[in-house]
Length: 180
Image (tube, rainbow, N blue to C red; front, side, top):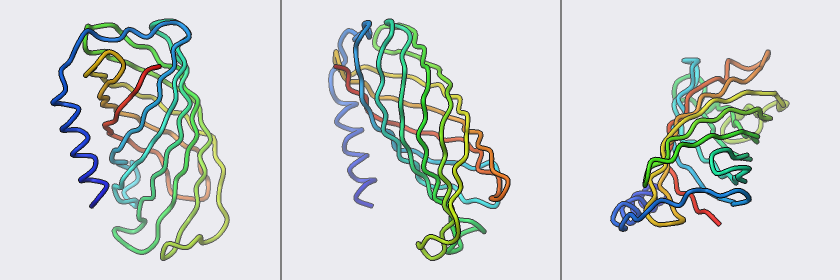
């Protein structure tokens, strides 16, 4: 509950700040950010769950960036039971953004390593799996100052797994991003 209160407060303060001319990323510029969202699995055996992500981006050009991200989701298995699968991911993506003043639409795609750990009553249960995956994403940044933006993103992940139920799914998230 505290996390949701903190997120709502942060979102409110960001929306109340005065937008100014957008910061166009320049070659060699860095950005870091964090997202809070909902993971909506494709396989109905999993429940929807909270998804957390942190990332860093490096801009090769004002439009093209490289992103490394790390995220975590822990969906319940079997409709609200005590079993779950902790899904930890590390992704390497290429991003492309368009300049539209205070808003920057963006798209991206990349590869990642997904670490899947079955859990029973919040304890590890059985062997973990390390799987390769692919993700596609897109969204919109809204600049609230020259170097800070509020970000909304939709990401779809495709993960190979022969043992666990299909861990593919959609994540819808909001977040903050800071440019340096």
